[in-house]
Image (cartoon, rainbow, N blue to C red; front, side, top):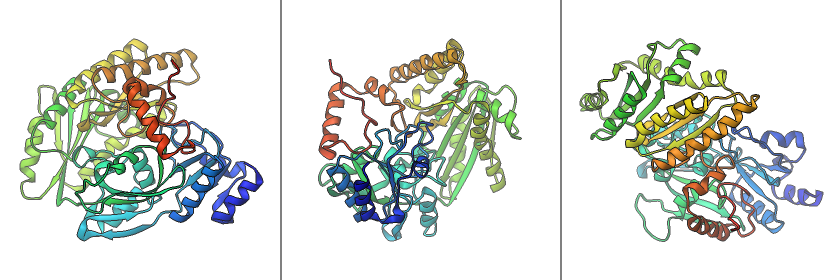
Length: 462
């Protein structure tokens, strides 16, 4: 980027809001995918007007823009592979309004998920999306990926919990979409279109979030099974009865052994899988709800079913689940992490298929995740310094994608596409539909400056 262009951008935002030295820009050139690229400049907009001026200037000069929250994503969606400018929204972190009477909160994109929960909690509410990285990930990032977490099984994803957006298209037009009410059918639903689009269509500068009252009470259960099939069958049974759990997490036997080896968790040897289940609601009737879920969880493979009665016991049960990520980092810091989804009834077939692929390719596979949605985080553990294993891992991953699609599933539930999964997209979406999506992209971003090279694969030339 020329000194003149940098000077013009600096004039828009001020000296303290722009970085351009490579050493200063590198921290904004990578995310949790381990992919990296150096941006030519990093800009920290403070409000909607500044952001609009930046986008208009970059569109005029055809400068690539990559929007960024805190970089917790795993698919490279915030890696500036086209160079240009990274728009970091970490300083645009205002809670504009909390409106408990209408169960609404209005925020800018740099507010963290945890800050939203704390502000909503003061009024007896919460925002349902709860990614694992909630303490640091931003609302803008949650919306860009449609990231949810365990509570999505009962309360839905950001798409179901966001009423409206303010945004700026790639050619610098300001738009508002959505409503301030819980019902509304005027015009096309651009809110849901922008959510999950990974910053390829427009830059979100404000979000109107739908809040949910905090439950009176919550119970946590831990169910341990002899085999993965037993646990997967229990998930289907739990989701087929009337009480919807607010969390239903799955951990396979390989993961359990890792937890046993790298923490003080009291788990039995030889367990095939574990479910973490939470039920919430009114105090009155909660015992009955827990019993209905417990009954559905019982099958011939159940080894142990434990219900936490105190806060300390609840924390102890969840500590078991939280011990998994550190254990995985110890065993395979360069693992491949996929977040595949299948219909809940197909979970037994998915887990069986993953076990077969693990043996076939001699690649350890660890599975855990949000089983109530059929969303598993499938981790291929490998040594990046072993060329043969890397080649086997590529073949194994290819087969995992085929397995998921054969089961009528999807290749990403909440991590997004970015650059890591981009070439798999055409296996799931036909070329006619992809063409329509590219035309939508063209309407929002005619010069193609927003998050270039992400999400949609290039059109085929055949």
